[in-house]
Length: 122
Image 1: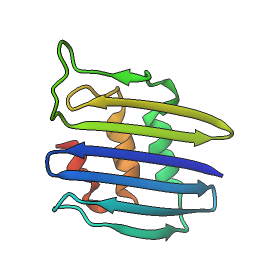
Image 2: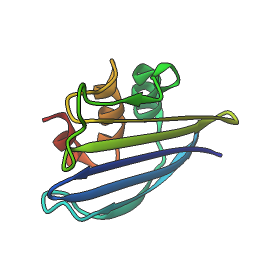
Image 3: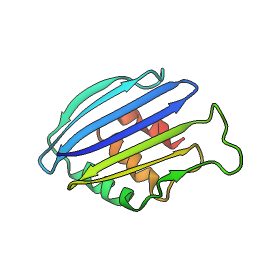
Image 4: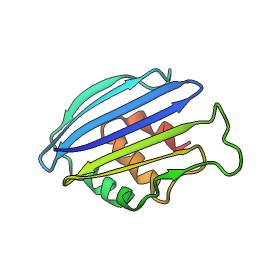
């Protein structure tokens, strides 16, 4: 089973997205304490758009860490991603404004399950 985990932490709260997926379906759960975002769970039967955006994100090529330059800020916005696909695991993390190339495609994949995930593009 393939899996995507996305965690976002900011002063407003946390957002945890977890999806188990295959070509023919996806089940997701979202836990959020950020006021603008809801906790949700559901299933996508049509995963084509999700998988295409995930492919465009190229998470497999991301660095392990995208830290802020200089001294890390204690209350900075932080994100973490873990992708398990075809038996391989990719883990990466970073801080606000230090995001890998193609990060927006990851967010577009999340938006297939949670339309309000565009919050993470701001």
